[in-house]
Length: 422
Image (cartoon, rainbow, N blue to C red; front, top):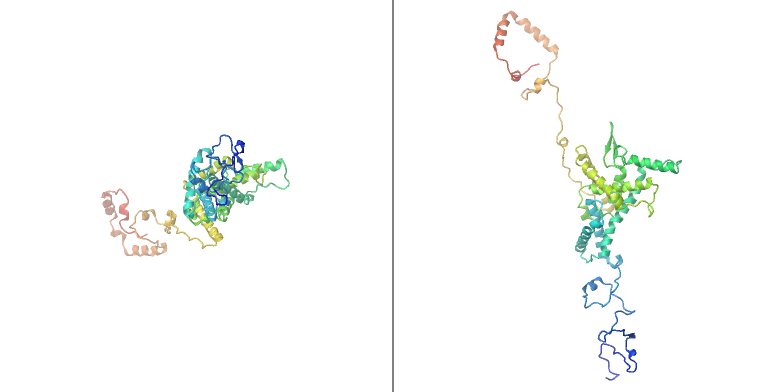
């Protein structure tokens, strides 16, 4: 082959010197012991870079791929385009919405399988909604699950703004052990459910005649709830479809707000006003059980006759007030006021005034309404009657004997057969 002619070979020939067998090289790389001349390429070179495309990696078979292990870089949010990023954020909010209906979602060892299945399902829903392709990688699943922790942290930050309503701070002159004792005593009072007027979850309502307890309606609990779920642009309720899933405040939703308040009270009572790694943690181990207790108490309240209707009205009112604030924040038209349907007998009936009648009149529906004539109008009539009639014309003894022969009646039915003039 002439040196001036272009080479048609697709490979660089191996240079070999008969007198020096060690001179066998391939692009400057010595052939390792055991290498075959039919597989002269090394596993990797310093200039080679593995592909970061997850799609290309998934399409390669074992025979087509490299013959040595490659370290694929861990993906990050920067690897997703704008549409995929929106889909990831939607998936995070959708998992948070699950907590609205299920409570504190645990990612413990026993529940990891269920969590993994649910997150994979949400990723599929996000792909359909945004017409994109998100692979359910471990990184993406962890990113979505981590949204639950971030949501609880945000709830705690809102709760810190309302803890002053519990008057935990001791007088300024107290210090040291006296300060600690005061706050512990105050916490014990707040956590005593047998004292409903001072319980940290209940509110009070002043009326002209009494002071009433409003169960699970403390201003701090409702304030945290409104601020986190309806007044934050990070709330999942900003999404119209997610907002349509709710028709009222769920007890899991409200108990989550109440649990955040309890955590903040505990931290302040322990004289830890700011959160850090060395302070009390808002963890699943410590506070998921507290939320379960509050949820169960709310569920029991909805089963009692004395609390059910007023508590349902407060849950509904809290949701409607929240929607008003949410729509105002989003600058969209206010929500439509739902049609209220009466559900109690008191709402379906209005009592009418009843005149005072004698017991005999009340026994019959056939008795017409009667009026009592003043006594002064009766006396002239009786006087006129005695003047015109001679009492001797009546044989009273005969009348009495006839009356004694009649059979007595078993009831007073005959007494009301005719009309009465009183």
